[in-house]
Image 1 (tube, rainbow, N blue to C red):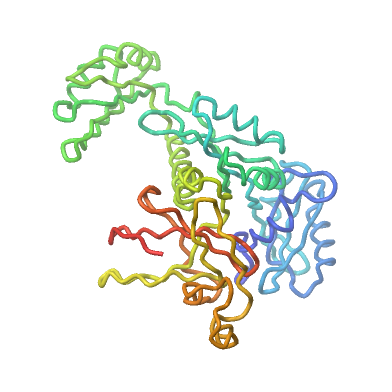
Image 2 (tube, rainbow, N blue to C red):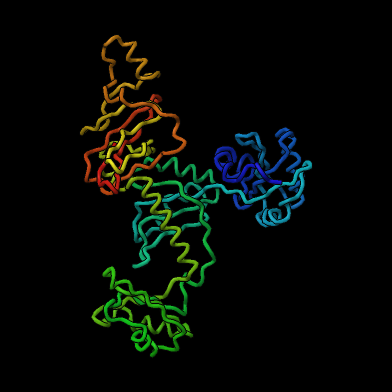
Length: 437
């Protein structure tokens, strides 16, 4: 029944652009109370669909507003904003597979991105600093702070979910150009219901163990004095990789775990100083893993913005760091030149910032070359003429990155026909160990 119907992921961009979190004129509804409705009758007009969808979902509670849109294939879909989140949850269960205008509809939770990643924060006061700079734009729903698994310390950054997408947009547009903080859009993450203090009260983590001497039997003899031990899980890869071993020990009583932490943390054992603390819950570890995955992905996309901001000096921060790079031949070591879309000029770096340069006029380089009758066109270099505009980059667009900004001289910029500036960073080919433009 639902074949060839729009999916919520396909419609995400339209949702962001047209719904702004389902919060339009009048009272703003929480995004958690917004539903995505697909498989509507394509022969009906938007006005007709809006009325029929509104009447249908009014059975489950007060509907603040309904927005009907169409995708690239002219398939209609809708966003329904309830005033009450509980009503939306009931409608999500009961309205799915119900009928509107003779069509069986599909109902899902609307996915409206309203999460920002914020970096360059004070590690000692991450949450306080996040609230001080972002709460002025609107209420915050969640603050999630990624931490180092080994040390338990935060990384001076955090993920912030706003209650409303338009508040997140306002914060992003206002702070994205600042050099004090680094902001980027991130995926929405829902915090799981953690146990007390996000820790397992019956289990402990024992780190920095001597990888050459430690055994499960030795650990049992050392820690059984604090109470009955249910399980010991020893992880020892140090014999192969030269890293300290660690273990997880579960006690029958929470008081036993607390006593072991108090007595054994920072105590020397088998020529090493042990680190003993409560074990994090599995749900919290999974959540932290996802936070760190997103953190690493954003760092990869932004090409080390924390270094780039210092590296650029008095240049303006750039918002686009992508280039369309052809696949290179690893066997022969040949790397074709980078191409850009739309046509643009290379602006070489200098000590005072961007070099003055005229914007490349429309038309292909060959057309302009023929019209010049052998004369050099002002502002167009031979390098610029060698840049061939490819089709719009629907695929093969890769984030520009490199491992160390100090290994390469200052990056040039490029300027498009419409005057937009883009940074050009050489792409690092890990297997070849070389940079290429």
